[in-house]
Length: 300
Image (cartoon, rainbow, N blue to C red; front, top):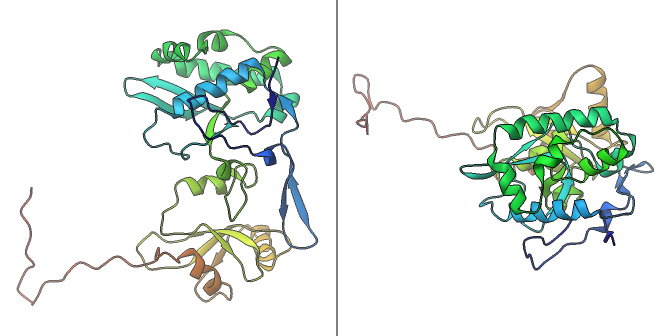
């Protein structure tokens, strides 16, 4: 009998004691963007776990448990349907992504022939890493059978969607379905913006609040250590002053840059650089006097 699925992709496949339930994955994700506008991102409809999915989820947690420093974050994790491909070589498991991922609800409009191209792409990758097959077999996954079976119908699409080759991106809940300020989930924000959160410097704040209380995302326009604090606005809420400026700039084919003389710069830059991310690098010491040279350390 299939287990009832809460849509959060949680599981304690590697013996984790704590399991996080995130019912918000099932529900519509509501993001207030000014008043009276509210926009919605569709959540997962209620569904049941297939036996195939249960195996995939368990395997993902076991693989994740072998990683010394998980890039997306530590347990507890949820298995995002993002097209992840876990590959095994002499150094252990490593992660790449397929051309696209198939969200669970997206399978019902998926063209089997196009989904089969994802299978073919994955098959070519794994052909170069044959150790992956035995490792997956030890986790209860017949990877060879999955990759060698053409996808020609809805059943094939469903199996691929819930397979270890798709439902396999290990995301903690805040970066999966979270909303600012508690997270910036891939279900709520555009991928080019949300992905920055995974590699942003610790001394820079990607997410800020504008002078009207609306959330926005900004990035510097100059390299770290230059002392420059100009900011490029990359995400805004509709019906906000900053959002209107952002939209107008895009309509002109330009980016919205908050230079140091911009009326909104001081308020936003104070947050973005609150951790000292705009401090200039120390200048190298100059020679003491004319005709003298600075000491040079011998090569190691």
